[in-house]
Image (tube, rainbow, N blue to C red; front, side):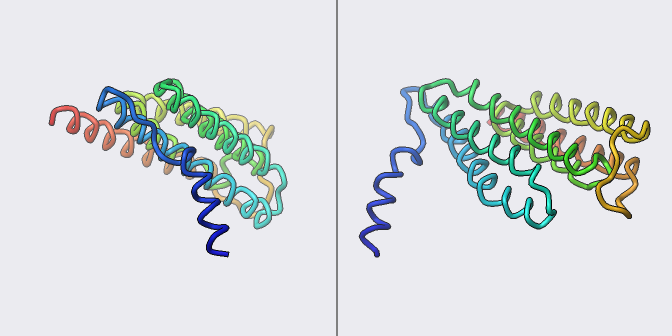
Length: 193
C-alpha cells in the first residue's frame, strides 16, 4: 500500500510543484498562482459535492466542476509562463461560480453572497490591491443587481425563513470594502519593502 502511495505522489509531483523561471519575482508570483489554483481546484472537487448533497441542490455541481476544471487549466497556463492570464482567469472563474451558486440558491436570501470576499482576497493576492478593489466594486454591483431582481420577484428564495436580502447585501458589502482596503494596504506595504 505504501508503495502505491509513493508511486502516486511521484507521478503527481510534476503537476503540483510550482514552476521556476529566470526572474525571481516571476517565480514568486507563479508559485502563488500555483498554490491558489491547486487549492481552489481541490476545494471545488471536495466541497462542491458535499454542499450539493447538504443543500439538496444538484445545481451546485456544475459551478463546482467548472471551477475545478478552469482552475486546473489556469494552473497549466501558469506553468507555461502566462502568470497574469492564469491569475485573471482563476479570479474571474471564482466570481462567476459564486454568482451561479447564488442564483441557484435563490439570490440574496442566502448568505452565500459573502463568499465574494474569497474572490476579493484571491484578486488581491494574485493581481494586486487595485484588482481587489475592482472585484469588491463588481461584487457590490452584482449584489445590487441580485437585490433588485429579488425585490422584483424574479428570483425567489428556495427555503422559507431565509435571511433578509437587504441585510445580507449590506453586511456583505461591508466585508468586501474592508477586505479590499486591507489587501490594498498589504499589497502596497509589500511593494515598498
